[in-house]
Every structure is written in C-alpha cells, then in structure tokens.
Length: 316
Image (cartoon, rainbow, N blue to C red):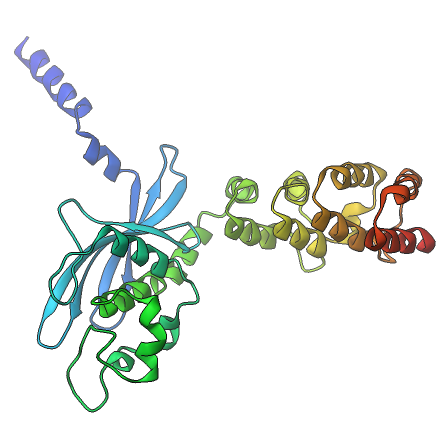
C-alpha cells in the first residue's frame, strides 16, 4: 500500500506541473551570433500542435551615454518572417531618459511608432553620427547638436532618449531577422503554405506565393483555390500582384473563366481593371460565355473599362 501511495503521489506531481513550465515546452530557442563577443537567444512560440506562431526575444541591452550606461529590459515580438510587430516590458521594468525621467505613456506610443518604421532614418546612421562635432562627449539631447543630422531626426525620436531609440530600432531590424527566415524555412510544408496564403498578413501571402508558383507562373495544383481566394479577396494590392504573376494557363479553362467573371462582378474597381488587363493578352483564349458577358457589360462600363473590354473582344 505504501508503494502504491508513493506512485500515486508521483503521478499527481507530474500532472500538477505549473503552467509556466508547460509553456516552456511550446517554445524553441535558437542562439544567434551578433558578432565575436555577442550572442543571444531568439525564441519561437509554438501552439499546442507544435506549429510556429511568432518569434520573440527577451532583451537586455546597455544604452551608454557620456560616462554612464543604463540597462534596458524589453521584449520584442516579430512575425514568422521577421517583421517587427510590437514590444512590451517585463513586469516591474520601465524605460527612462538620459535625465532618469521615466517614459510617459506618449513616449511609449511614440517608441512603438518609431520601431514600426521599416525605412527609418536610423538605417543610414551610425552611432557616431549622433555625437556632437568637436567633442568626445555623447549626449542624448537632440538639441545639443547644431548639425543637420539631429535636426533632421528631431521629430522622429523621443527627446532625451535618442540612443535608446537608435539602439532598439537596430535590434528590431538587425541580424535576428535573416535568422528567423532560416528557421521558418525548416517549417515550410503544404500546411504552412496554405495557412500563409489564407492569412491577412500580406508578408505571409507574398512569401507563400513565391513558393507555390514557378518562374512561369504555374501554380501547384493543391494551392489553386488559395490563389483564387487571394484574387477575389479584399486586398486589392495583393490581388493585383497575383493576377500579374500567375501564368496564363491558370485562366485557360471555361470553368476558371466563369469564376473570374463572377469575381469581376463582386470585386472592387481596381481589381476589375487588373482582371481586364490580365485577360488582354494574346496567350489567353476567351471562352464564348465570357465573351458574351463582357459584351453585355459594355452598356454599364466606363471609358477605361470599355477600351479594355473592346480590345479583349477584338482580339478574339
């Protein structure tokens, strides 16, 4: 009886593992080498089925000023292709400025706006560009330098936290990004590609389309419905991209042309024009039902649509 009681106690301990320990089982860790002296851990969050969800990193970095370095604790989150999404702070941590004033709510929001800028001016700057000319002192005040650089970025940084903004932006868009791309390639399979094509994240859709189409625009058969959904979707930019890059064979059957006409009637004007331009090619033979529908639509077409439709019909 004593042995049975011990076994039951052991099993109870196994099933009562606290949630944080279970959470660790759904995170993969990767070591990223930044340079000869700096390595850090990049983490990939997984769902209960082991499917990748997003990347994140628990960051500690010193931000150095004249004779002082202050620690910055912050968590960064990226999507599965390494596109920066957001940040948050560990419990009990705050961000401060050079004069030790804590960030205000507006500063935190501005930092998010700064980090969301993929084409930030920081991309072309080095740390020494933020140093006042004629002195070895570093300053975090955008008013301290009369040169063009700091005047240019004055409205793009948080006053009193220039170096913090600079440092964090370069982490968000640094060497971790290509490492994330390498990692997600190891997860690339049909299920992930379907998921990406169905996503509202256009980065995922562009990436997946490049995987399911070859150089001539031929679409792998399991993904044809996904491409149809993109063309018929609400994002006109990616619908136009799909129309321009898919091969002419995609539209050769009468069934597919019937679907395209139904899509034309439901979609927005920009996509309608993209569809007509795609049909206006010598390599696409228009079916009789589609030609009849185009002819009928002329009575309600504007000048741009009329010209494109007439060219399509004349070609036939």
